[in-house]
Image (cartoon, rainbow over all chains, first blue to last red; front, side, top):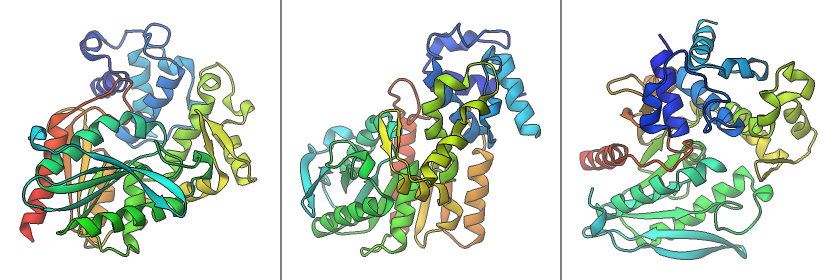
Length: 82
Length: 282
């Protein structure tokens, strides 16, 4: 249920525009999207924290969280449920 | 919005005890409706939002507001290093800007702040010499501590994505401890003083309820969506406390954080209309 909102935030923050519309849950992110460098990840985390009203700890941040759009949306869902 | 009717902005320096603050003044076109002082956000968010701030300043000026944009100590084109910046010195800069503006522009006095600038505006308004009649808040930071964490993470960007235990690097907690021990930190090209970090740590929007009327804009990711839960809660708490606050949502990318420069006309139009409606009521 968080997939669409997570996708919109990803598109907005990384300024992906039309290219981002084709992303789905299986789309790989880290290593696949050139826009998603380490600084962009930090910006994305901040946007997710504020949009979903969640607090993300250092320990929550790992490459596997950002592996795909689906893994990122699952992470948001888990944080919302916590 | 009719930016074409706006007069060109005047660029100049205001003198603050020998130190220079860069200012842009947008004179009002036509009948003067009031004065607006812009309070910019912090670090990279300031740079990324420069375009939207300029567009809004021009739109407000075209609608009859005299708008002053002042670069605070250590920011933008003003004197001083970021490492010298302190919360109270920034409030002094705002007082300087407000004084200059009030000498030139009559009518209601409006503070307009973005992100951390919104918190600075709220804190400043509490004991401002020139009474504030209305505030325009753009996506205010709700908790200074969270904002500080987000800033500190910039220094850890490479490390946090490496697989393994993030705590072995000390993480944001380690950086906080260094600040608390009185050490300044270099973060993304900005020297963060421990004094400024300590002030940010303690800031919270819910303790800064203003006495004046407030229009608060929040971005949403789809039309008709509710504001983010944290913002909605904070605005509701203010309403319960008797603050005359209106929360407006606009489908808009978070332009202070986007990789590329973002423009959003609806956001600008909503801000102008909200302010005009407010001031018309009184």
